[in-house]
Image 1 (cartoon, rainbow, N blue to C red):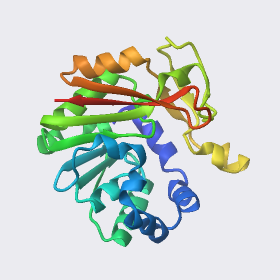
Image 2: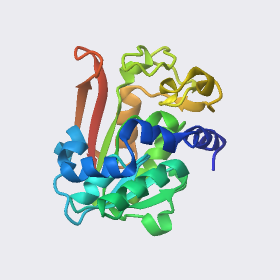
Image 3: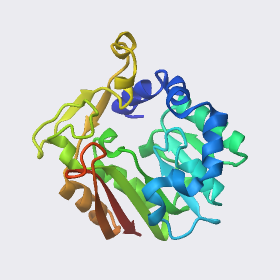
Length: 250
């Protein structure tokens, strides 16, 4: 595991389970919401899936299972890949309460076992802002390509690169030149929700933010055929881009 992955793992295992209980409810409470309206719990991402029943989905950095469990309820075979044991604990408890099965691999995403998962998945899906955790986007996209079946779909939804120059999403991360290639340390995404005394103790994450062209070119240069690129407004200001979704086919 890379040094920066070890660093990010420490951050994402610091009070993570308690955070999910506080913000999403107990596993039973969260499961009730998922069971009641799985399509609704997928939010905008539902429009990017052609079908659900029987498809194999890799949920990259799937965190607490907030999208994986709705997908499983809709009939997909879902494997979450994530670096945090705390996320695994919460996700599997929610899945059990929802009476569905999800697989959960705790690992460095760049070290996914391609001897087993090579060309395994119909869909590789990620959302919620994950690309900045990886310092080499080409290395990341090569792994995504390797685990997709021929004809499989990549659904990559992430923070819009506009956030490099503006903290429009209110994540309280540093801003910089849009074209900066610097790696920097910053708080993990949930740190701002903790009391200051806890926040000061939380391990930092190691980030590298990308431009739109870096993201698009990495998808194309690593063998995927880009089919669609959507931009979405920020949740704090609908006049400014806050997220994007790229769709590509192997």
